[in-house]
Image (tube, rainbow, N blue to C red):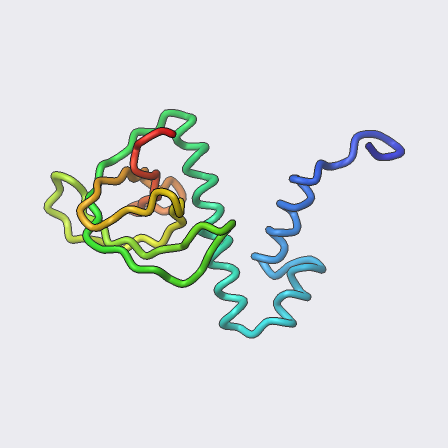
Length: 141
């Protein structure tokens, strides 16, 4: 608690710093962008985007947004980790749709990495019409 009232929580402060780093704005963002090369900074931005999409999926699921089933055609590792969970490239085919397979880069739980042929759930991305967000395998722990 601050002198003049309630201060921000640690989570709020950490989220603000992470947003500054990802956007390249503010003190932390400018320092990060200045000390890293363009390629490494782009990796940080991609990882933050993957993390934020996971948070968005949890919020959408809590609101009751419908999910779409898809089958994993193939999976490949990007070599990046977010909170010790791997960021992967999934090639997916919507179940019951004649559309071509598409690629989705997302974070998956290291305890539940999907394999070729597994069924997973997707959510239509409200921020990207025609895009999808990975919603897991549909099994609750």
